[in-house]
Image (cartoon, rainbow, N blue to C red; front, side):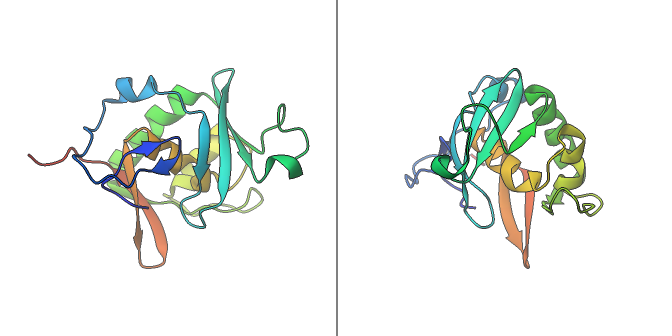
Length: 158
């Protein structure tokens, strides 16, 4: 993932002007999440809607998904709670490996995927959730070796 730009509707702005300040969690929670995103690793498109306090991720293309208006491929329950607790997890770990894996597979310990499993019945959550946190300007995703990691975004030095 690129750093140094601001996220808007899931896309990196190429403007390399001054960094926007890192918001407080309370300010970040006021930001609407709906929009188009791309996964961290393979840059696969997905769409996010907020419904009934949950985060609904629609993966793939609308014309091939069937009932796009009513069925999400991936749902994360309790929007505000999952964001708050994910940030606490990331802060506690310092940096956490994403470790996405399919729903029928057990995630590796101490990965973001393992943490997120208590908020959904789906898999590959660590592919879809980090771009949402990036849009909120709370985290940055980076590559270490062959794996992707996430860490809390620090306020720019003055």
